[in-house]
Length: 284
Image 1 (cartoon, one colour):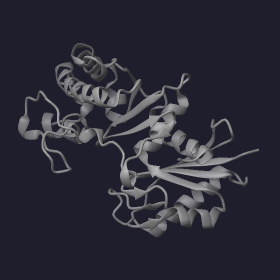
Image 2 (image 1 turned 90 degrees about the vertical axis):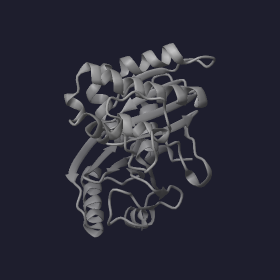
Image 3 (image 1 turned 180 degrees about the vertical axis):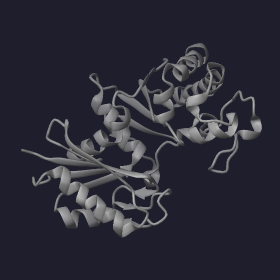
């Protein structure tokens, strides 16, 4: 019986899960992420061993922050300072003698959400609205990559926005007027002076309008059939955020079809399911 392991390697927490061929999780474990690289690698090995339960592993998949090289498996996640030019694929395959696949967390999450779709859309986009904002694009189930493995940075587009505190619109990338600065958790704190969960509906209408403008750009250029939203901000707000965003799409988008826009079906398991999908099916 085939056994696969998925890893979600974050800056504050590590998640690991195992599944059989149907990719239904059978074991899982969560641990706080250590700062030191060696300690982090050893923790991942122990978590893999725990969820494998003594079984032979057929493949391991992992989601991690960028930048990275998905083909060589060398990672340098921005929010984990001790992890620089780490040959993670080489390390894991030497230890576990099975294929190891790793990609940026938004691409892996897109695979997970696509796997959960009953009807597989030809053109699919996953967008996470959390502490920051990012996305992963699939065509016929395959990750869309540009030169050098680059993927769409949906949070770093400029939009025609509404904001009652324009001085608070500061993107961490250094550019001006980025969508991420208007809708992500850090941006919301800067603009409104409190966390997303404390916004009133009037403020959500403003955030949702800005998100809708970004989704309008995405739909006009990429023509996705389905856009799935995940991440803590989107999942926490739900329809308070989606309703005004959909209104912008429906009222403003012309010529191209309005895509289906919905919340993640997997919630906080998106990256884990995606990592298991990569473990089984690969990344090509």
